[in-house]
Image (cartoon, rainbow over all chains, first blue to last red):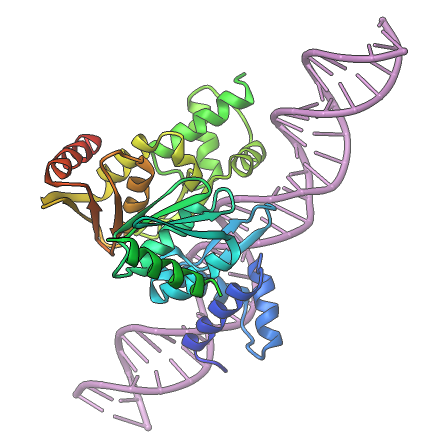
Length: 152
Length: 152
DNA sequence: GACCGGACCGCATAACTATACAGTGCGGTG
DNA sequence: CACCGCACTGTATAGTTATGCGGTCCGGTC
């Protein structure tokens, strides 16, 4: 049997890769990977890990990593967000303008804040635009390039 | 009987003022206010309004307004957050430093971003600190005062 | 070894939430 | 008015999650 620790790590991996809607679903998926536990244990794991259950834009339920989780690897989180939601990255003077899907800008702004990038002074987000403030035009260029690389 | 619309408004008001942990709790509270509905209706309302259920730092369950909801009245949202989580507001040069309960800084930073305040260029949040960047020391003073007023 | 305490888990079930179905009321249409 | 369609709701129940209790398995102590 897997240790509790590695089981929880497995759960983290699973829920970030595929949509898991119920604990039973998770139990069955884990069973398929040779990890045999009951729904009760999963319930405890989920609370312990602080996972969140929310509904996506199709109002389908899904478990997800908590917000704070993103701090462990802000680059990866930002990369995922960029790939999923960002459309255009542009430079304007000492700022980087990021256009994204409507409604996703606040989330993007947040992960970008969490990058804690030296050249990023701060950012503000509207509905579909993130404005990233940098010290000067050259830094803006660098940040823009960095973000584009993140977004793969 | 209240209209569906006003009932939902009432729900919004209730959950932002007090901790509501279950739908039954909400049903009873509403009943106390003369609004008599069943749990089923509440369940539908909650999904329709996109309310979220999460656990606070004491791991107590609570319903809350969705993130996007805060945009309608960012001042109120920020005020609530400030009252609940902020401890110290200080000025340092052209910045405002906000110390808060551990783990609450990202959320605070976010609502502050959403204030879309003229004098706030942007902000970054750590675990228990929000750094707010303003154009100059005078603006920082003004922002600090504004935030303190918000926090009541 | 005997005993204790704590972490962990499963079982059974309580607690909570979502939904299928049917009923009501209301506005529009013939 | 008769009829239809739609929004809304309650009832009953299915679906989902949380938890009280008891058991097992260590690791430490006497």
